[in-house]
Image 1 (cartoon, one colour):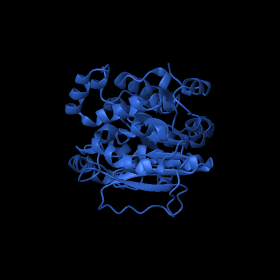
Image 2: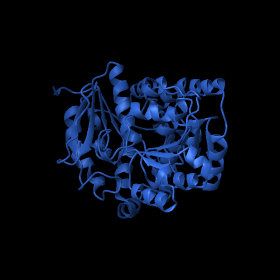
Image 3: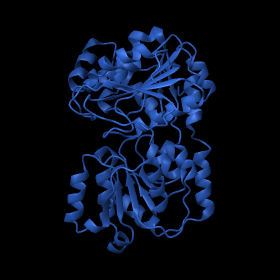
Image 4: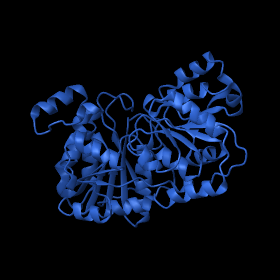
Length: 400
């Protein structure tokens, strides 16, 4: 039954973890909401969809869900009118908020929440990376707003959300610095609150026992480096490719091109496309292969990086954006787009056997550092723009 009384926490996000278009941001919002509910808070999440989409929800959600109308023919990062979604989220969010509500927006859908700031505490939780052309923009000038409106209007919506919020949070020091450079957010109103780890990956444990295969998982898109994963795999010696076939677990705009490239290279039998996997299936896939390859070109945090390393699995990724922050001393990181270095690292790591002690040390490192309950508590400590700097600094979250 839907509640008509104000919620303690309202979180908003375009799309949902159960939509055809989904990614780390949607999963992060879901996990954060679950953790908020576990802290005893009454939580509602507002996702978006087009009216004709039928999206069944899990029966055991510990929070309530509302839907806002997604303005566009179909959900997607390139939907040209998505910057207007603030208009559809606002009336729904207004009805859910009271004077003590913590309202957390996560993207361009939060553009107009500042108009109802008096109804609660407003946080903009940035879960994206931003284009370099935004760096150094002077948002005090009308010409900046007009120029960027014509170049990429969703960034105008993000600017409204971030600049008018009581505080903006980011999942990494890299993304916080980028947000400040692109949108002029003062350090006193910015904090780092890292993502946590899905409990399924706490329980999944990699044990070296002769596994075979290389796994890529996530959206099959250029920014995730799916094409680089295939190119690097095709550079492996034929005997290694046959012994360790590459599985793409996910979907996205590059799928047809990847399938065609594999066929043309005579490697169709060595490249498998499994589609999206549930969290449980993904944890099993990660621990049942020999190596995970995630050559992303941009990550504001990197849920996939954390999920892989937390199991103890061997990872090859890149030095892009926030990945080195999350990976710490583990995994093999190569320069973004350096396919030759990627292939060389794969060939080396596929031939190396790691000991149980090395694997268990890696698992402890990540499981000691990342928790959704800890992330939820950091959000719940954000009380007002006037007190956020002191509270966040005490929690070790502020970056000057």
